[in-house]
Length: 204
Image (cartoon, rainbow, N blue to C red; front, top):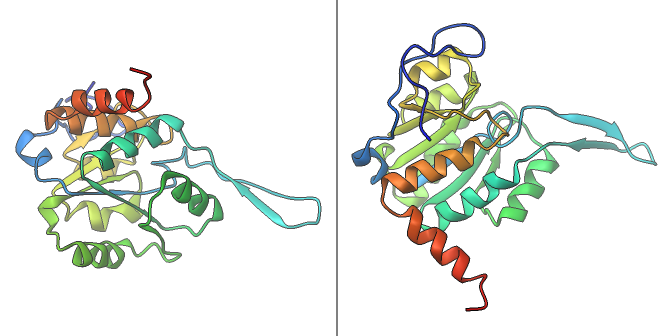
């Protein structure tokens, strides 16, 4: 488990920035808030659009169920999680409700930086206490400021170049779960959180 190593190629054929195999421990311990892009991070970036029986537009997205548990464990560790998307979608709202996330922000103009600043202000956090997972150009203004910028495995070159760490998994294919595990393992919290999760679902 770990990030892309030196010499790897980005999916577009351009070399990405070399990143370490592990998230630096001193950085991991500072994280109090994780910002997640949606399309291309929590989903595979596919959008399925059709109509129902009365002609109303229906939009569907594919979310990875393992990412949901990763988000649950991040929150169990006391880390806040916020979805910040540059596309307004009922499917995103539905997934946020299912995950119990109150911080779900959809900015049609993809101006994510003011949204993140507002969240940080309410939570009284500074940039070194924030991580973000991104995949595409609209994520760059935030990724350039956070203490832990993370690229999913199939992120564009520009995102990979600013990332401290890159997942092996692609967006919508378990990248968020991979990040959650590595972050919590680095903090020394993963095993206890897993045991607590299992104990809550055991007859013992």
